[in-house]
Image (cartoon, rainbow, N blue to C red; front, top):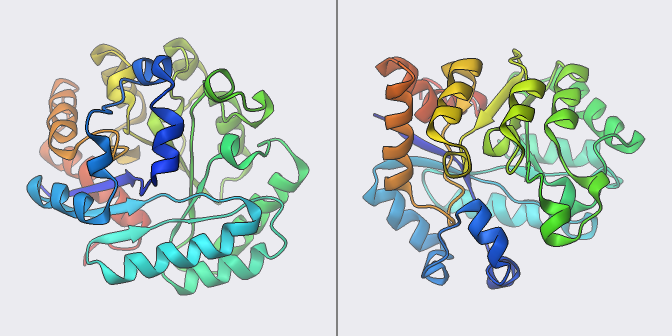
Length: 288
């Protein structure tokens, strides 16, 4: 089975240090924090991928307005040096040169944009945010491999980090974007609502041609039956395998997801779509 991890992070010690002391958050999200300081390097990521026979991984950076272009350049340079490692880019509604950055990302073969509204401090319902998505959608109309957008969905961000609740990506606000911008493929990280009540996920997240969910973390915060219900509801063509590395390791996440897909009645070809086919299509890698 070909495996591609669609959700990995390259964290520094500051990010880890901001999370680990929040013991209730760690417990709620079931984060694997033991010895995590040894999982912060690129070499550690590549070693773990090799051990689990993971053929590719997508890094998901975000940045504030002032560092946005620099972060994009750094991640593009990193991905260019390491076979099998790919990167998303990031944007911000307040960034003045969105069209230029979209062109730069596209020329660098970046096909995914990662947004984390609570840490980047913007509302999904703001006029500038809508304008940003309109520009992405317009750009998508002019290229063969369009941008997809990954949205972080930690619904508990205001509770654990004291962020503005208006900046939280909720299942409701995520679905609103999916409906409003049909020319963009949206990927709801963590099965669309990390920490959200399951009944909210079922009520608000409707299957749509331009809507995908990645599995990162969710198999730890949803029950097995709930996770399988999400697999049934959205179907194998709209689910992406992701680990949320370094919080979780590849081998155990692959085994867990495989067992859940087996219980959901997924065929071998359907499992393959989840484990790699869907993200490879989004990245324009299908058939390579």
